[in-house]
Length: 64
Image (cartoon, rainbow, N blue to C red; front, side):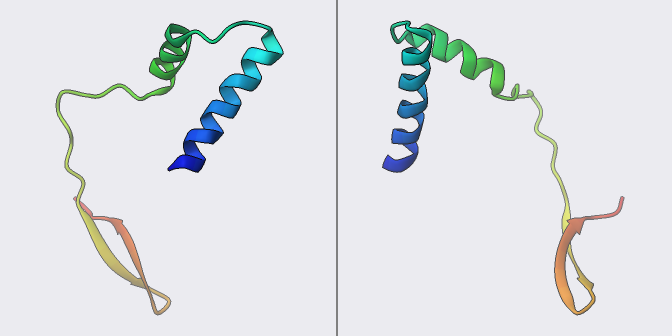
């Protein structure tokens, strides 16, 4: 967890240094909102099943 947090801060600080701009939380939040997938009101259920393929078990989508 600390490593991932440090990685994010290094990327943020490097970008600030490269662009010669101070850190701005609103800019970071805006960029995150663009990258995050939109949450839908209705979550769709997905059915999975195990299938044997060449002697190995593999998880696949269940056929409708």
